[in-house]
Image 1: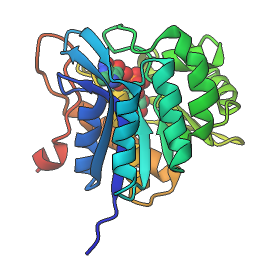
Image 2: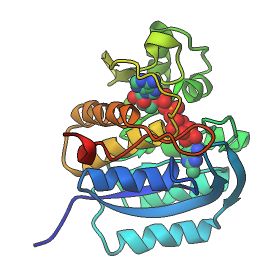
Image 3: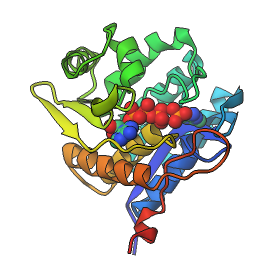
Length: 267
Ligand SMILES: Nc1ncnc2c1ncn2[C@@H]1O[C@H](COP(=O)(O)OP(=O)(O)OP(=O)(O)O)[C@@H](O)[C@H]1O
Ligand SMILES: Cc1ncc(COP(=O)(O)O)c(N)n1
C-alpha cells in the first residue's frame, strides 16, 4: 500500500547531530513520517560551536528539491538554515514553482553558541520572498526582534511582535520563548491574524538545549504531514520538544542536544 506521510526539510547539516537536517530527520522519524532533505550548507559543528560553514551551490540545492518533488508527493515542508540571499531566492522560487504547501519557515539566524548562520543582507529577502509563502513562521526571541524591529522583554512585547511579523504575510506566527528570561522560557505566542494564544509549558532546567528550535519546527512539519490542523500541530510539537528537553543528552563538552529517544525510554 502507498505511504503518504512524507515531509521535506530544506536546511543546513550539523555535523554534531544536534540541530539542522540531522535534528529534523530524527524528529520526522519519531513521528512515523518519512523524511526527505535538501541540504543548503554544511557546518563543521559540535556542542562547543560552529567552526566552519560552506554553502552548497544553489543549482545543487534546486536539483535536490527537484529530484524529490518530481518523484515523491510531499505533504509538508520546513526551511531552516538558508545562509544567504542567493539560497533564499533559489529556495523561494522552488517552493513557488512546485506549489509546495504547508510550509513552516524557521528563520534561523544565529546558533545557540552565538555564531551567525545568515548573512545580514539576506534578512530582507527572507521577509519579502520566503515568509509570505509560509503557513507558519517560527522565530525565536532574537529573530522576532530582527523581523519586527521591536525589543522583546515581556509577553506583551512577544504579542506585539507576532502581529508585526504576521503582516509580512505568513498565515500563522509562533514566537518561541526559549530566549526569554526565567518563567517565560517555555512560553510561546501563537497569532492567527485575529487572536493571540499563549502556549505554556513548565521551564525545563537543563543546559543541553541545542536544536530545540529545529526540533520544534520539524515536529510541526511532521504533524502537518500527518494531516493535523496547524494549531494542533503546534501544540503537539511543543509537547514533543518539552519531552526532548527533559531527555536532553549530556554529550560533548558544551551545550548538548535535545534527546529524541524518550518514546523508547519511557516505562
Ligand atoms: N528551558 C525550556 N523549558 C521549556 N521549554 C523550552 C525551554 N527552552 C526552550 N523551550 C521551548 O523550546 C521551543 C524552541 O524555542 P527556542 O526559543 O529555544 O528556539 P530556538 O532559539 O530557535 O532554538 P535553537 O536555536 O536552540 O534551535 C519553544 O517551544 C520554547 O518554548
Ligand atoms: C545547521 C544548523 N541549523 C540550525 C542551527 C540552530 O540551532 P541552535 O540554535 O540550537 O544552534 C544550527 N546550529 N545549525
